[in-house]
Length: 235
Image (cartoon, rainbow, N blue to C red; front, side, top):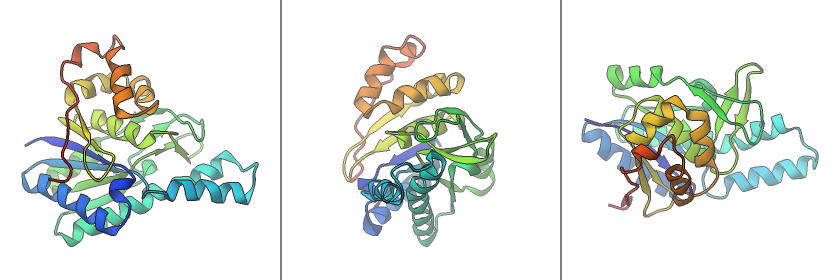
């Protein structure tokens, strides 16, 4: 049995049929006896639409309200995937960033992850065999209680940070309908002691770019022998 984090990007959850396909991948891992947490992005095009609506509402919009709006895309995806999994007889529950919680800085639109409490997820893995479906790209600033978003690549950041918080064995990322990558527990072990620093690196770009950044960082270089690998998400 392994503990997995599976991250699905916007194209892979673009509509209900693709969300159902994602659910089949998740169910396969659950049926194999694994403990699974899923991190999802907004459905393809949704975040851009939400951003445009903010701009139409006011060119000088409040960054706190901007985050409240744009974070809703991932929340919709998480809820839909949890519903779909339940329809396949998989015990699943959706989580928003503030519910875990994923604690962040107060830099709305470009917040940095400070800490994640993975205890409740681990408890539910063991007691309920429950799949956690987590809305990526978001967290909460504890002092103000406001929703925050992590900026470009924020769902990747969320996935890696969650993997660190729950001591996952593997962290898969599927950005499209086919293909993806895997980050193993060696990197996650380092992230447990330095989530904020390493998560910032992940947030800077694509999986390939993030790997190069990680490989050049002395704090995590010892674990880079465990490499990214192709994940055939259409199998």
